[in-house]
Image (cartoon, rainbow, N blue to C red; front, side):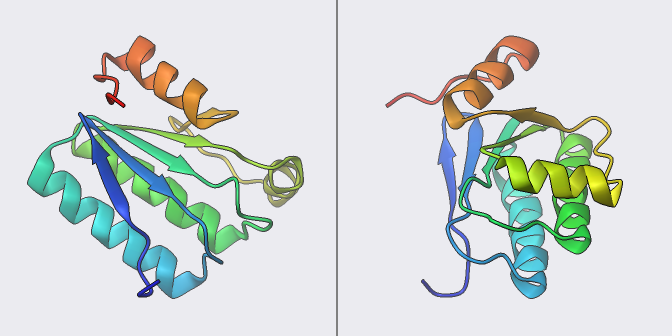
Length: 125
């Protein structure tokens, strides 16, 4: 991998699957890449799969919240999917609050949530 996380556009949704250790610099790069993509493509849904992450610290949590807030200002809803139980427990213990950010157990439910709640067009396989 070239040090970037791929952003896949499927229909009106940006799919981000994080399969590497999300360190601080990479999280900031992802935030900037997502903002630029939303400005170019105008997608109305963002789905971020964090199922491969064993750890989400307060900086990464803040970057995820910033991505969702930025996307919201640019007209897109964000759903974070695949959170492992240990990550959820850690975020609660850290007092992380993600107002307005949606979560779902997996990609399928996240896409359904975007489609049902916000009228985002489902990607076609």
